[in-house]
Image (cartoon, rainbow, N blue to C red; front, side, top):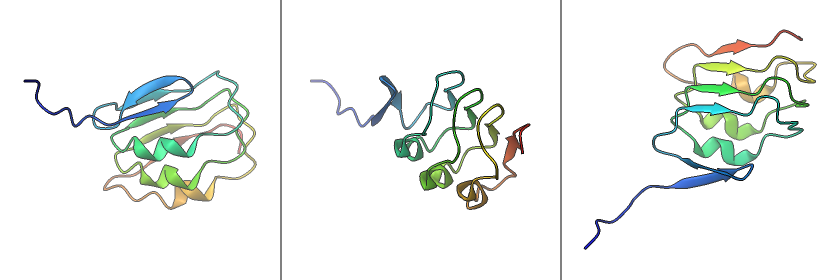
Length: 101
């Protein structure tokens, strides 16, 4: 018999991601106007590319990405740093790269 598969997946923009192993996530140049709140389930992410979209804010669930250490936000429509980023509490500094603020 097959062993029980405990892998959990989340689907974001028609792509399926493994919440226990995926550590890089590229959503650059996709035309996003809102980041799905399901992003918070990808707790093992350490790099998140969101540049060149139409984002103005981030969902509160971004603070659940406790392994995140680099967040690329350049070339979006942010006017201030989203408060969800400030609630991020990993054991290391979060590097936010955004040229438009």
